[in-house]
Image 1 (cartoon, rainbow, N blue to C red):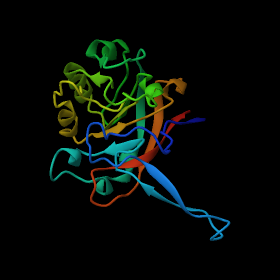
Image 2: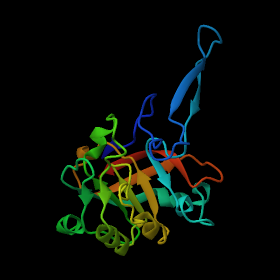
Image 3: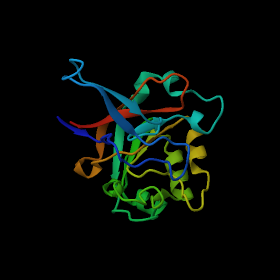
Amino acid sequence: MRVIDVSTTLENGMWSYQPLVPAVTPYHIEQIASMEKEGMELSTIHMTMTTGTYIETAAHVMPGAKNIDEVAPERFLLNAVVLQLDDKGASEPVTRDELEALSADIHKGDALILATGYDRMRDQEDFLQNSPYIEPEAMRWIVSKGVSLLALDFPLADNIKAPAGITQWLFETDALLMALLTNLREVSRQQVRFIALPLKLKGTSGAPCRALIIEE
């Protein structure tokens, strides 16, 4: 068995959604107690629910949908299919043709993980603004597979320059959406087990999580 951590490390100065949503609080951790003064190490953390690697429910855009604390825990432990796409650069789309070309055996209820290598750009200033995106026909193909969770190694599913509302299509199936995974190029198998456990935050549509891929 091989376990691969595909979570983003949280650290000061990391990327955030602030360029898209000005009210977003960038991640910040600050030490408030030290071994020398208080006899213990203690820090305070400031962040939004979409920090690092996180999961969102349909409540992100659909009033009345389940919040993250209301999702059954078994939804976070899934069989998953990892699709290794060619490396994506700035604003490059994920197309239906390239998804179909991989001939993946996707079952209803699986997690679908798209690997584009774009997470390597996460320290770049325009990381968010230049995110790859999923073309509408590609999202229709994904939705048709009945996936339980869609996970990405790029920050935006939709085209930031010309949004088509494709995340709504996914959420209408009660699927979960997840970003930003890292290290997916280390995954050697297409069929894996996937564990992604979000913080149990009451009344929010999403939460940061620790995500692991298990190759058996």
